Image (cartoon, helix red, strand yellow):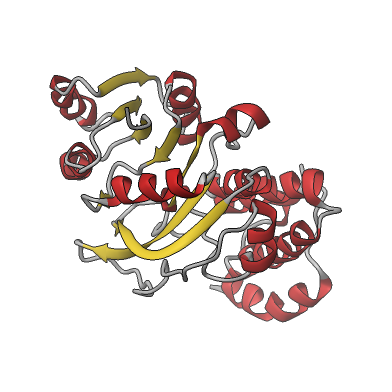
Length: 298
């Protein structure tokens, strides 16, 4: 019997897109799936739409009060029984042969993680610019997870978003890997943790995933203190777990730059840093202070 793949789908207020997204999973050429949908307190009819899919005996549907995407995924992991897992966003689309092709490669090479590429699309008139090739990676050789991080961390081939990976569930279970609750950017720690503990990994350039950009999504919303706090929590995770690991140091340096630019460029209050062991380096204060001052004058 082919290995079972657990597809985890957190759902929150995606009614216009949910049918198309879930159908792209149900119509996969690889059929040995358990599809776990977790409704995270939707208020727009998403739960009612999700119930329609229960006619397929591979689908399990759960609902909870709104606790955030991370909590929904943690619930999914508790339920999942597959050898492999795939985390799927409920407004995106997966190519029909994606899971079949990936599982064939994973079984052939005993992979813990397989990464693939995606293409972005926008079906709404939104004021957001993105690069078409933003999620295009290169083919890589077979590597350990740490070797992959060390070689590709600061390149496009290392992608933070978990929707670009199928992985063995045992890595999560055996190493207690969790998302940080109730923040955007939750994939940044999860993906790094996953690779850090993986033995055999690969990435391929094939575009199996179609990523939707829509109004009011995490990707397109204006940056705010929520984003700053999220990145500060991500930084705290890396400082605690990877401060003495070479690639971890590189990522911490990158996070320091991102956090500093976010706070200064978007005129966020310095008080956002009060609960964290973090201060903006002087060079960023000097660089962005004139812009910050002008913004305040407006």
